[in-house]
Length: 445
Image (tube, rainbow, N blue to C red; front, top):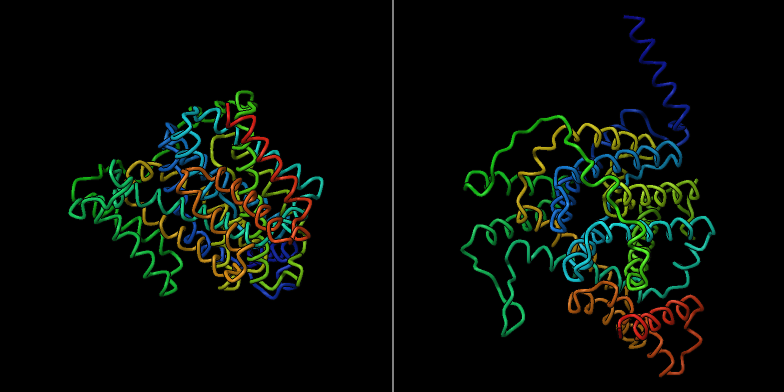
């Protein structure tokens, strides 16, 4: 018995030294509970990401495995190298842009489109290496940042409504309400309100519970075919190594690559600041310990993730759920990573989840992302007009890239037209000129 206790004590001592638990006022047990909590709030991505990427023609079970792998590796690296309670995984929003716009609407093969994600991730890594990342965030106006985030939220929500057949095409009115007597609409609606109600009641695993419930009902109704629960991981060679990095180096894809990079820039950086602030680790300027290591981990994880066939990786805002129950160190993130590795053996479940079971999650993400619109100065038209145009033009044009471009142009037009040209930063000028050049020389042809 003493030997067992000694071994347990040695392990705890090692964890204390590696993660500086006492210094952060936490314990091994607290960190493990926090890791489990974070995992339960974000494990939905292993079902939602393959579902979305399969719409682009990718193997759903292979993407399930690569999603688990990159979430595991990225989270463990974040824990070990940055010692932060932040987990990472493929980003919501970028996967929808990839599948529904770049592949679906633009007709580009998934191999080339994934190559564009790869180059966007390389751009993010270079911005990190040359310390331009926070300069861009600091110099792009709040109205445009909010417009971009909210626009992506509206776009994702529209995809969720479409996947559940709640909205359907209509030649006379563009879109209309679907048939509320259909299984898709009923269960998609049930899934969304399950998430919304549970989240409002502070259930950390609201999204996961919704997916399980709606898939289970679909199984009873005969919509879902049972494929088993446990199995050895399927081959991932149908996606790994098939990314067309060279094919993505096309001038016509410059706007797409820039969009991937810009969205990932705001998403990941904003989450890192938000979660560390909630954990009491960030200062007034948003800086936190081992920031450089954290930025490198999420940038490199994005590059690796895209190369093995998943959308860009980002820090997950769901990490705040682990922080809320006491997670303060990288041990929380390491626990999340280990749990993602274990989930790989549940690959049959990924193929069972129908589109309407994940539709509610997409709409819910839209709710969360559009909530930032309250931060816009609506009484100042030079700020509200660009934010509005950025947000609404993404779903209306079915293009995140065009929404961002028109938002930047609108910002410059409004500031110049009202004599407030001093509000326009050098960063905004450069980005706007690049978008105008794209419109003139790329889109026009």
